[in-house]
Length: 507
Image (cartoon, rainbow, N blue to C red):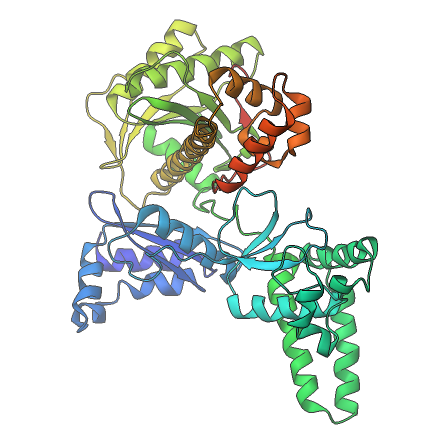
């Protein structure tokens, strides 16, 4: 694409909003991920002639390697930070140096099972029964806000699981009277729980009354000419808004590409010569490791935008070797068999992730089911080629074509969905294997434990008394041994699952 045409496209098609952009090379590989407060301004900077003369050879090499790009519009710079971090960790782009380590944004952790719970910072979301809030990109603001909240609600800041008189001796909070001192019995567990509940309201975005309280104190400090205290209160107010304002509470589902819409639907209809606009599009992807724990994902777009209510996940049941074609055929058969049985509407376009082989498998499944005819295509990732039944040569669209970019967003979303499900199953399998490491737990006892509690995660939360009471043949002593072993071998589980995702009901 000529430089002038690129600049024209950037200025007309890319919004001047915050977001994240992804550069790819001519093979379709992600080579750089960046964030921007203004996507239009940032992307246009890559195509100015002056950049070719820049002294930095690394930047010059990056610019010369860019073949295509895509962008994700988000609501704020904070969401852009989170999304950029996630994409860099997923793709590990060659030209990204910062954040290629395992840096994680801070979380807040609260374990309500403790006798006197408190709030702490954490970087890893673990499967330990605690509640986690975040992640939050403003680390310094979060830490200072946490310190303020602990003092405001009188919660303990000590690390001891069971605070005692010994804890009190080395505690500084008692001197400045920031702590309600549960260690020496100055507050009951019920009274302390009321303070925790007040703090939880703040964590969930209810900060209006607290901000009003700070404003009153700021005004009083200024009137008393205590300007340093007023400045401190102002910083606390600003940090509180930045960290816990409703706009900034949750970043985990911010990464849906904003490249669709009806213009993209119309562009795709024209490019593929479809009779009707593909308003309802469905896309399948397969994920497995040498045939193990094979899964399929179904992602739906409506009007060029994600339609999460119609996402589906499938465990592959009949294919036990590494055969993506057979797996694709099984998933499509099961999905459309259910559609036919429920008299549900067919998609305006079905997309399979892959080339001729995956497309042929999809067509075979649909023909065997005698589904009403509708368009089906395959999208091959290497060169972004669109394969159409009955045509020997694929359709190749310009990498900046709106229709192709929507298909790429659809395919990438189905891939993310499949990988997330597959990773969760691997993690669950890893957790189940922890039972095999406990002496005395054979297949029969393992089956009985999982049957009673459903998962290792639920089993880990159970007390020895609950284990002994729910599992026949396991006494109190052995139940205690199981509980102790699981507590010593906690496994991190991070699985993103929007509320609207649905499991395949045949599973």
